[in-house]
Amino acid sequence: MISLKSALAKLFAKLIYNRIQKWTNNPVETQQKVFKELIKKASETTFGKDHDFISINSYDEFVKRVPIRDYEDLKPYVEQVVAGKEDILWKGKPIYFAKTSGTTSGSKYIPITKDSMPYHIEAARNAILLYIHETGNSKFVDGKMIFLQGSPILETKNGIQLGRLSGIVAHYVPKYLQKNRMPSYETNCIEDWETKVDAIVEETLPENMTIISGIPSWVQMYFEKLQQKTGKKVGDIFKNFNLFIFGGVNYEPYRAKFENLIGRKVHSIELYPASEGFFGFQDKQNEKGMLLQLNSGIFYEFVKADDFFSENPKRITIKDVELGVNYVMIISTNAGLWAYNIGDTVEFTSLKPYRVIVSGRIKHFISAFGEHVIGKEVEEALKEATHQTNIRVSEFTVAPQIHPEKGLPYHEWFIEFENEPEDMDELAKKIDQSLQKQNSYYFDLIQGKVLQPLKITKVKKDGFQDYMKSIGKLGGQNKLPRLSNDRKIVEGFPYIN
Image (cartoon, rainbow, N blue to C red; front, side, top):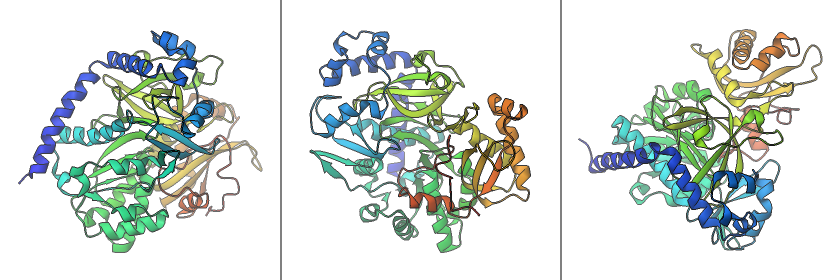
Protein backbone atom coordinates (compact mmCIF):
# COMPACT_ATOMS: atom_id res chain seq x y z
CA MET A 1 0.00 0.00 0.00
CA ILE A 2 1.31 3.41 -1.01
CA SER A 3 2.04 5.85 1.82
CA LEU A 4 0.65 9.39 1.98
CA LYS A 5 4.16 10.78 1.60
CA SER A 6 4.72 8.68 -1.54
CA ALA A 7 1.34 9.70 -3.02
CA LEU A 8 2.02 13.41 -2.38
CA ALA A 9 5.47 13.07 -3.98
CA LYS A 10 3.81 11.84 -7.19
CA LEU A 11 1.42 14.81 -7.28
CA PHE A 12 4.22 17.28 -6.61
CA ALA A 13 6.33 15.60 -9.30
CA LYS A 14 3.61 16.16 -11.91
CA LEU A 15 3.30 19.83 -10.95
CA ILE A 16 7.06 20.41 -11.25
CA TYR A 17 7.25 18.49 -14.55
CA ASN A 18 4.61 20.81 -16.05
CA ARG A 19 6.45 23.90 -14.82
CA ILE A 20 9.72 22.72 -16.33
CA GLN A 21 8.03 21.96 -19.65
CA LYS A 22 7.09 25.64 -19.97
CA TRP A 23 10.69 26.86 -20.11
CA THR A 24 12.12 23.84 -21.97
CA ASN A 25 9.58 24.56 -24.73
CA ASN A 26 10.74 28.21 -24.90
CA PRO A 27 14.52 27.96 -24.36
CA VAL A 28 15.77 30.99 -26.29
CA GLU A 29 13.12 33.34 -24.86
CA THR A 30 13.83 31.96 -21.37
CA GLN A 31 17.54 32.73 -21.69
CA GLN A 32 16.86 36.21 -23.09
CA LYS A 33 14.69 36.96 -20.08
CA VAL A 34 17.40 35.70 -17.67
CA PHE A 35 20.00 37.84 -19.49
CA LYS A 36 17.94 41.03 -19.24
CA GLU A 37 17.17 40.48 -15.55
CA LEU A 38 20.83 39.86 -14.70
CA ILE A 39 22.01 43.02 -16.49
CA LYS A 40 19.25 45.14 -14.95
CA LYS A 41 19.80 43.92 -11.37
CA ALA A 42 23.58 44.35 -11.54
CA SER A 43 23.67 47.73 -13.30
CA GLU A 44 24.31 49.61 -10.03
CA THR A 45 27.10 47.30 -8.82
CA THR A 46 30.78 48.20 -9.11
CA PHE A 47 31.21 45.61 -11.87
CA GLY A 48 28.09 46.84 -13.64
CA LYS A 49 29.30 50.45 -13.59
CA ASP A 50 32.80 49.47 -14.72
CA HIS A 51 31.29 47.69 -17.73
CA ASP A 52 28.52 50.19 -18.47
CA PHE A 53 25.68 47.72 -17.90
CA ILE A 54 23.13 50.51 -18.02
CA SER A 55 23.85 50.90 -21.75
CA ILE A 56 23.71 47.21 -22.60
CA ASN A 57 20.58 46.41 -24.58
CA SER A 58 21.71 43.36 -26.51
CA TYR A 59 23.92 40.30 -26.26
CA ASP A 60 26.35 41.74 -28.85
CA GLU A 61 26.88 44.81 -26.63
CA PHE A 62 27.54 42.52 -23.65
CA VAL A 63 30.20 40.63 -25.63
CA LYS A 64 31.92 43.92 -26.54
CA ARG A 65 31.95 45.21 -22.95
CA VAL A 66 32.50 42.06 -20.90
CA PRO A 67 35.46 39.80 -21.77
CA ILE A 68 35.63 36.15 -20.78
CA ARG A 69 37.30 35.79 -17.39
CA ASP A 70 38.48 32.96 -15.20
CA TYR A 71 38.89 33.20 -11.43
CA GLU A 72 42.29 34.88 -11.63
CA ASP A 73 40.87 37.62 -13.89
CA LEU A 74 37.85 38.18 -11.62
CA LYS A 75 39.94 38.04 -8.44
CA PRO A 76 40.31 41.83 -7.93
CA TYR A 77 36.50 42.08 -7.64
CA VAL A 78 36.19 38.92 -5.53
CA GLU A 79 38.80 40.23 -3.09
CA GLN A 80 36.67 43.33 -2.50
CA VAL A 81 33.67 41.09 -1.77
CA VAL A 82 35.76 38.93 0.57
CA ALA A 83 36.88 42.11 2.35
CA GLY A 84 33.22 42.78 3.20
CA LYS A 85 32.35 45.46 0.63
CA GLU A 86 28.79 45.58 -0.75
CA ASP A 87 27.40 45.90 -4.26
CA ILE A 88 30.59 44.75 -5.99
CA LEU A 89 29.61 41.85 -8.28
CA TRP A 90 25.95 41.55 -7.22
CA LYS A 91 23.71 43.72 -5.10
CA GLY A 92 24.45 43.58 -1.38
CA LYS A 93 26.74 40.90 0.01
CA PRO A 94 26.78 37.16 -0.70
CA ILE A 95 25.29 34.95 2.00
CA TYR A 96 28.06 32.36 1.52
CA PHE A 97 31.39 31.74 -0.11
CA ALA A 98 31.90 28.25 -1.47
CA LYS A 99 35.58 27.69 -0.76
CA THR A 100 37.35 25.51 -3.28
CA SER A 101 41.00 24.64 -3.73
CA GLY A 102 42.24 26.06 -7.01
CA THR A 103 45.24 24.54 -8.75
CA THR A 104 46.81 27.87 -9.71
CA SER A 105 45.20 30.44 -7.45
CA GLY A 106 45.22 28.78 -4.03
CA SER A 107 41.82 28.91 -2.34
CA LYS A 108 38.97 30.21 -4.46
CA TYR A 109 36.04 32.05 -2.89
CA ILE A 110 32.98 31.57 -5.09
CA PRO A 111 30.07 33.82 -4.02
CA ILE A 112 26.61 32.38 -3.37
CA THR A 113 23.86 34.98 -2.97
CA LYS A 114 20.33 34.91 -1.59
CA ASP A 115 19.19 34.99 -5.25
CA SER A 116 21.36 32.07 -6.38
CA MET A 117 21.13 29.73 -3.38
CA PRO A 118 17.51 28.59 -3.92
CA TYR A 119 18.37 27.27 -7.38
CA HIS A 120 21.02 24.91 -5.99
CA ILE A 121 18.36 23.30 -3.79
CA GLU A 122 15.54 23.44 -6.33
CA ALA A 123 17.52 21.69 -9.09
CA ALA A 124 18.54 18.78 -6.84
CA ARG A 125 14.93 18.40 -5.70
CA ASN A 126 13.60 18.60 -9.27
CA ALA A 127 15.97 15.87 -10.46
CA ILE A 128 14.34 13.44 -8.03
CA LEU A 129 10.82 14.67 -8.82
CA LEU A 130 11.28 14.23 -12.59
CA TYR A 131 12.55 10.71 -11.92
CA ILE A 132 9.36 10.01 -9.93
CA HIS A 133 7.23 11.47 -12.72
CA GLU A 134 8.94 9.39 -15.40
CA THR A 135 9.14 6.05 -13.59
CA GLY A 136 6.17 6.22 -11.19
CA ASN A 137 8.56 5.00 -8.49
CA SER A 138 8.09 7.02 -5.30
CA LYS A 139 8.36 4.33 -2.60
CA PHE A 140 11.93 5.33 -1.85
CA VAL A 141 10.74 8.54 -0.15
CA ASP A 142 9.72 6.39 2.83
CA GLY A 143 13.23 4.98 3.28
CA LYS A 144 16.54 6.44 4.40
CA MET A 145 18.69 8.56 2.08
CA ILE A 146 22.39 9.23 2.36
CA PHE A 147 24.29 12.08 0.73
CA LEU A 148 28.06 11.68 1.04
CA GLN A 149 29.20 15.27 1.36
CA GLY A 150 31.61 17.68 3.00
CA SER A 151 31.37 18.90 6.57
CA PRO A 152 28.47 21.32 7.26
CA ILE A 153 30.65 23.26 9.72
CA LEU A 154 31.09 26.77 8.30
CA GLU A 155 33.61 29.50 9.06
CA THR A 156 32.85 33.21 8.97
CA LYS A 157 34.84 35.80 7.04
CA ASN A 158 33.84 39.46 7.35
CA GLY A 159 30.27 38.50 8.19
CA ILE A 160 29.94 35.97 5.35
CA GLN A 161 29.85 32.23 6.04
CA LEU A 162 32.14 30.01 4.03
CA GLY A 163 32.63 26.29 3.53
CA ARG A 164 32.44 23.55 0.92
CA LEU A 165 29.40 23.70 -1.34
CA SER A 166 28.13 20.29 -0.20
CA GLY A 167 28.49 21.41 3.42
CA ILE A 168 26.53 24.60 2.72
CA VAL A 169 23.78 22.68 0.92
CA ALA A 170 23.50 20.33 3.93
CA HIS A 171 21.85 23.24 5.81
CA TYR A 172 19.02 23.37 3.25
CA VAL A 173 17.64 19.83 3.37
CA PRO A 174 13.82 20.26 3.34
CA LYS A 175 12.00 19.53 6.60
CA TYR A 176 10.04 16.68 5.03
CA LEU A 177 13.34 14.87 4.36
CA GLN A 178 15.09 15.58 7.68
CA LYS A 179 13.96 12.33 9.32
CA ASN A 180 15.00 10.31 6.26
CA ARG A 181 18.38 11.91 5.84
CA MET A 182 21.67 10.31 6.83
CA PRO A 183 24.32 10.43 8.20
CA SER A 184 23.78 12.18 11.52
CA TYR A 185 24.97 15.77 11.88
CA GLU A 186 27.79 14.66 14.20
CA THR A 187 29.09 12.11 11.68
CA ASN A 188 28.76 14.60 8.84
CA CYS A 189 31.04 16.98 10.76
CA ILE A 190 33.95 14.51 10.87
CA GLU A 191 36.75 16.06 8.79
CA ASP A 192 38.95 13.00 8.19
CA TRP A 193 37.34 11.22 5.24
CA GLU A 194 38.27 7.64 6.13
CA THR A 195 37.09 8.07 9.73
CA LYS A 196 33.88 9.62 8.42
CA VAL A 197 33.16 6.76 6.01
CA ASP A 198 33.77 4.20 8.78
CA ALA A 199 31.24 6.05 10.97
CA ILE A 200 28.75 6.21 8.07
CA VAL A 201 29.04 2.44 7.60
CA GLU A 202 28.17 1.86 11.28
CA GLU A 203 25.20 4.25 11.15
CA THR A 204 23.68 3.00 7.92
CA LEU A 205 24.09 -0.77 8.26
CA PRO A 206 20.88 -1.30 10.29
CA GLU A 207 18.81 1.14 8.19
CA ASN A 208 16.46 0.80 5.20
CA MET A 209 18.62 2.72 2.71
CA THR A 210 16.73 3.56 -0.49
CA ILE A 211 18.81 6.41 -2.02
CA ILE A 212 22.59 6.70 -1.97
CA SER A 213 24.22 9.80 -3.42
CA GLY A 214 27.69 11.22 -3.92
CA ILE A 215 30.75 11.39 -6.18
CA PRO A 216 31.25 7.83 -7.53
CA SER A 217 34.85 7.42 -6.37
CA TRP A 218 33.90 8.19 -2.76
CA VAL A 219 30.67 6.17 -2.82
CA GLN A 220 32.79 3.27 -4.09
CA MET A 221 34.92 3.58 -0.94
CA TYR A 222 31.74 3.43 1.18
CA PHE A 223 30.47 0.37 -0.71
CA GLU A 224 33.80 -1.43 -0.34
CA LYS A 225 33.84 -0.81 3.42
CA LEU A 226 30.27 -2.11 3.70
CA GLN A 227 31.26 -5.26 1.83
CA GLN A 228 34.45 -5.75 3.89
CA LYS A 229 32.47 -5.50 7.12
CA THR A 230 29.58 -7.80 6.16
CA GLY A 231 30.88 -10.03 3.38
CA LYS A 232 27.67 -9.20 1.49
CA LYS A 233 26.79 -7.32 -1.68
CA VAL A 234 25.44 -3.80 -1.05
CA GLY A 235 22.13 -4.77 -2.70
CA ASP A 236 21.72 -7.62 -0.19
CA ILE A 237 22.48 -5.34 2.76
CA PHE A 238 20.04 -2.68 1.52
CA LYS A 239 17.30 -4.64 -0.24
CA ASN A 240 15.27 -1.51 -1.11
CA PHE A 241 18.23 0.47 -2.47
CA ASN A 242 17.28 1.20 -6.08
CA LEU A 243 18.43 4.74 -6.84
CA PHE A 244 21.99 6.08 -7.03
CA ILE A 245 22.40 9.84 -7.48
CA PHE A 246 25.81 11.13 -8.53
CA GLY A 247 27.66 14.12 -9.91
CA GLY A 248 31.14 15.48 -10.39
CA VAL A 249 32.51 12.77 -12.68
CA ASN A 250 31.34 10.44 -15.42
CA TYR A 251 29.74 7.31 -13.94
CA GLU A 252 30.50 5.04 -16.90
CA PRO A 253 34.05 4.07 -15.87
CA TYR A 254 32.63 3.02 -12.47
CA ARG A 255 29.40 1.36 -13.63
CA ALA A 256 30.67 -2.24 -13.96
CA LYS A 257 32.47 -2.01 -10.61
CA PHE A 258 29.36 -0.59 -8.91
CA GLU A 259 27.04 -3.22 -10.33
CA ASN A 260 29.43 -5.87 -9.01
CA LEU A 261 29.56 -4.23 -5.55
CA ILE A 262 25.77 -3.81 -5.46
CA GLY A 263 25.04 -7.20 -7.01
CA ARG A 264 22.42 -5.87 -9.39
CA LYS A 265 21.59 -2.89 -11.59
CA VAL A 266 20.00 0.17 -10.00
CA HIS A 267 18.61 3.31 -11.58
CA SER A 268 20.88 6.36 -11.49
CA ILE A 269 20.41 10.12 -11.81
CA GLU A 270 23.31 12.28 -12.91
CA LEU A 271 23.58 15.83 -11.54
CA TYR A 272 25.73 18.75 -12.69
CA PRO A 273 26.28 20.85 -9.56
CA ALA A 274 29.19 23.23 -9.03
CA SER A 275 30.06 26.01 -6.62
CA GLU A 276 29.30 28.46 -9.44
CA GLY A 277 25.79 27.12 -10.04
CA PHE A 278 23.65 24.04 -10.55
CA PHE A 279 23.77 23.59 -14.31
CA GLY A 280 21.83 20.45 -15.10
CA PHE A 281 20.38 17.09 -14.16
CA GLN A 282 19.35 13.88 -15.91
CA ASP A 283 15.66 14.19 -16.66
CA LYS A 284 15.16 10.88 -18.55
CA GLN A 285 16.47 7.41 -17.71
CA ASN A 286 16.92 6.44 -21.36
CA GLU A 287 18.19 9.71 -22.80
CA LYS A 288 21.86 10.64 -22.88
CA GLY A 289 22.77 13.92 -21.21
CA MET A 290 21.48 16.29 -18.55
CA LEU A 291 18.76 18.90 -18.94
CA LEU A 292 20.49 22.29 -18.98
CA GLN A 293 18.94 24.60 -16.39
CA LEU A 294 17.94 27.60 -18.50
CA ASN A 295 15.61 29.18 -15.95
CA SER A 296 17.89 29.23 -12.91
CA GLY A 297 19.44 32.70 -12.88
CA ILE A 298 22.29 31.58 -15.16
CA PHE A 299 22.95 32.94 -18.66
CA TYR A 300 25.06 30.62 -20.81
CA GLU A 301 27.56 31.28 -23.55
CA PHE A 302 29.62 28.76 -25.47
CA VAL A 303 32.96 28.82 -27.27
CA LYS A 304 34.25 25.97 -29.42
CA ALA A 305 37.02 24.30 -27.43
CA ASP A 306 39.25 24.05 -30.50
CA ASP A 307 39.08 27.85 -30.90
CA PHE A 308 39.17 28.81 -27.23
CA PHE A 309 42.85 29.76 -27.04
CA SER A 310 42.82 31.71 -30.31
CA GLU A 311 43.08 35.51 -30.43
CA ASN A 312 39.36 36.34 -30.50
CA PRO A 313 37.20 33.21 -30.13
CA LYS A 314 33.57 33.48 -31.22
CA ARG A 315 31.04 33.45 -28.37
CA ILE A 316 27.57 32.09 -29.05
CA THR A 317 24.35 31.63 -27.09
CA ILE A 318 22.08 28.62 -26.75
CA LYS A 319 20.30 29.27 -30.05
CA ASP A 320 23.44 28.69 -32.14
CA VAL A 321 24.92 25.57 -30.52
CA GLU A 322 25.28 22.33 -32.49
CA LEU A 323 25.17 18.67 -31.52
CA GLY A 324 28.43 16.83 -30.85
CA VAL A 325 30.71 19.89 -30.72
CA ASN A 326 33.07 20.29 -27.77
CA TYR A 327 32.31 23.69 -26.17
CA VAL A 328 33.81 25.62 -23.28
CA MET A 329 30.85 26.73 -21.15
CA ILE A 330 30.80 30.38 -20.05
CA ILE A 331 28.32 31.64 -17.43
CA SER A 332 26.92 34.88 -16.06
CA THR A 333 24.92 34.43 -12.87
CA ASN A 334 22.82 35.96 -10.11
CA ALA A 335 25.76 35.24 -7.79
CA GLY A 336 27.78 37.90 -9.64
CA LEU A 337 29.93 35.87 -12.01
CA TRP A 338 30.20 37.53 -15.42
CA ALA A 339 31.27 35.82 -18.67
CA TYR A 340 33.00 33.41 -16.33
CA ASN A 341 34.91 30.37 -17.56
CA ILE A 342 34.24 27.55 -15.09
CA GLY A 343 36.77 25.36 -16.90
CA ASP A 344 34.34 22.66 -18.06
CA THR A 345 33.81 21.53 -21.62
CA VAL A 346 30.40 20.22 -22.65
CA GLU A 347 28.77 18.59 -25.66
CA PHE A 348 25.09 18.83 -26.54
CA THR A 349 23.33 15.49 -26.92
CA SER A 350 19.92 17.03 -27.65
CA LEU A 351 18.63 20.45 -28.74
CA LYS A 352 14.95 19.80 -27.98
CA PRO A 353 15.27 20.05 -25.06
CA TYR A 354 18.85 21.21 -24.50
CA ARG A 355 20.81 18.40 -22.86
CA VAL A 356 24.56 18.25 -22.26
CA ILE A 357 27.25 15.88 -21.15
CA VAL A 358 30.43 17.11 -19.48
CA SER A 359 33.16 16.14 -21.94
CA GLY A 360 36.11 17.25 -19.80
CA ARG A 361 38.04 20.23 -18.54
CA ILE A 362 39.56 22.84 -20.84
CA LYS A 363 42.79 22.41 -18.85
CA HIS A 364 42.49 18.62 -18.62
CA PHE A 365 43.49 17.29 -22.02
CA ILE A 366 46.49 15.78 -23.72
CA SER A 367 47.89 17.66 -26.67
CA ALA A 368 51.59 17.22 -26.08
CA PHE A 369 51.88 16.23 -29.76
CA GLY A 370 48.86 18.07 -31.19
CA GLU A 371 46.37 15.24 -30.58
CA HIS A 372 43.73 17.18 -28.58
CA VAL A 373 42.57 14.12 -26.62
CA ILE A 374 39.86 14.96 -24.05
CA GLY A 375 38.37 13.24 -20.99
CA LYS A 376 35.28 11.93 -22.78
CA GLU A 377 37.44 10.14 -25.35
CA VAL A 378 39.64 8.29 -22.85
CA GLU A 379 36.59 7.26 -20.81
CA GLU A 380 34.81 6.01 -23.92
CA ALA A 381 37.92 4.11 -25.09
CA LEU A 382 38.25 2.28 -21.77
CA LYS A 383 34.52 1.51 -21.68
CA GLU A 384 34.59 0.11 -25.22
CA ALA A 385 37.71 -1.98 -24.58
CA THR A 386 36.34 -3.60 -21.41
CA HIS A 387 32.77 -4.07 -22.65
CA GLN A 388 31.54 -7.66 -22.28
CA THR A 389 34.69 -8.70 -20.41
CA ASN A 390 35.25 -9.37 -16.71
CA ILE A 391 37.83 -6.58 -16.56
CA ARG A 392 36.89 -4.00 -13.94
CA VAL A 393 38.73 -0.74 -13.37
CA SER A 394 38.73 1.07 -10.02
CA GLU A 395 40.38 4.30 -11.17
CA PHE A 396 42.73 5.63 -13.86
CA THR A 397 44.56 8.64 -15.22
CA VAL A 398 46.48 9.28 -18.44
CA ALA A 399 49.68 11.27 -19.05
CA PRO A 400 52.02 11.78 -22.01
CA GLN A 401 55.43 10.10 -21.99
CA ILE A 402 57.41 12.55 -24.08
CA HIS A 403 60.92 11.20 -23.39
CA PRO A 404 60.81 7.40 -23.15
CA GLU A 405 64.02 5.48 -22.57
CA LYS A 406 63.63 3.95 -26.01
CA GLY A 407 61.30 4.21 -28.94
CA LEU A 408 58.69 6.80 -29.87
CA PRO A 409 56.72 8.87 -27.33
CA TYR A 410 53.35 7.52 -26.18
CA HIS A 411 50.36 7.99 -23.88
CA GLU A 412 50.85 6.22 -20.57
CA TRP A 413 47.70 4.90 -18.88
CA PHE A 414 47.95 4.44 -15.12
CA ILE A 415 45.18 1.97 -14.23
CA GLU A 416 44.11 0.49 -10.90
CA PHE A 417 42.29 -2.78 -11.67
CA GLU A 418 39.66 -4.55 -9.63
CA ASN A 419 39.83 -7.50 -12.04
CA GLU A 420 42.85 -7.20 -14.29
CA PRO A 421 43.04 -8.64 -17.82
CA GLU A 422 44.78 -11.88 -18.67
CA ASP A 423 46.45 -10.11 -21.60
CA MET A 424 47.48 -6.53 -20.76
CA ASP A 425 48.89 -5.90 -24.25
CA GLU A 426 45.59 -6.91 -25.84
CA LEU A 427 43.68 -4.47 -23.60
CA ALA A 428 46.13 -1.67 -24.45
CA LYS A 429 45.65 -2.44 -28.15
CA LYS A 430 41.84 -2.27 -27.85
CA ILE A 431 41.93 1.03 -25.95
CA ASP A 432 44.34 2.48 -28.52
CA GLN A 433 42.18 1.39 -31.45
CA SER A 434 39.11 2.99 -29.86
CA LEU A 435 41.02 6.23 -29.26
CA GLN A 436 42.23 6.28 -32.87
CA LYS A 437 38.67 5.74 -34.06
CA GLN A 438 37.37 8.66 -31.96
CA ASN A 439 40.20 11.14 -32.50
CA SER A 440 41.54 11.76 -36.02
CA TYR A 441 44.55 13.74 -34.73
CA TYR A 442 45.61 10.80 -32.57
CA PHE A 443 45.03 8.41 -35.48
CA ASP A 444 47.28 10.51 -37.75
CA LEU A 445 50.05 10.64 -35.13
CA ILE A 446 49.99 6.86 -34.66
CA GLN A 447 49.84 6.16 -38.41
CA GLY A 448 52.53 8.76 -39.10
CA LYS A 449 54.87 7.11 -36.56
CA VAL A 450 55.02 10.26 -34.41
CA LEU A 451 53.58 8.29 -31.48
CA GLN A 452 53.68 4.61 -30.65
CA PRO A 453 50.49 2.98 -29.28
CA LEU A 454 49.67 3.60 -25.63
CA LYS A 455 51.14 1.63 -22.75
CA ILE A 456 49.47 0.59 -19.48
CA THR A 457 51.14 0.94 -16.08
CA LYS A 458 49.43 -0.95 -13.26
CA VAL A 459 48.65 0.95 -10.05
CA LYS A 460 48.46 -1.05 -6.82
CA LYS A 461 45.16 -1.49 -4.94
CA ASP A 462 43.99 1.78 -3.33
CA GLY A 463 46.96 3.53 -4.95
CA PHE A 464 44.91 6.48 -6.16
CA GLN A 465 43.17 6.81 -2.80
CA ASP A 466 46.60 6.85 -1.14
CA TYR A 467 47.75 9.49 -3.62
CA MET A 468 44.71 11.73 -2.99
CA LYS A 469 45.26 11.32 0.75
CA SER A 470 48.94 12.26 0.40
CA ILE A 471 48.00 15.60 -1.20
CA GLY A 472 45.18 16.28 1.29
CA LYS A 473 42.36 15.75 -1.22
CA LEU A 474 40.72 12.54 -0.06
CA GLY A 475 36.91 12.75 -0.10
CA GLY A 476 34.58 15.71 -0.39
CA GLN A 477 34.30 17.17 -3.90
CA ASN A 478 37.88 16.29 -4.88
CA LYS A 479 38.34 14.31 -8.07
CA LEU A 480 41.31 12.69 -9.79
CA PRO A 481 41.89 14.24 -13.25
CA ARG A 482 41.24 11.72 -16.00
CA LEU A 483 44.15 13.04 -18.01
CA SER A 484 46.84 15.72 -17.91
CA ASN A 485 49.01 17.44 -20.49
CA ASP A 486 52.07 16.88 -18.29
CA ARG A 487 53.39 14.31 -15.82
CA LYS A 488 52.97 16.24 -12.57
CA ILE A 489 50.62 13.64 -11.06
CA VAL A 490 52.54 10.55 -12.18
CA GLU A 491 56.15 11.71 -11.99
CA GLY A 492 57.78 9.54 -9.34
CA PHE A 493 54.32 8.07 -8.56
CA PRO A 494 55.01 5.69 -5.64
CA TYR A 495 51.86 3.59 -5.99
CA ILE A 496 52.79 1.53 -9.04
CA ASN A 497 52.47 -2.24 -8.81
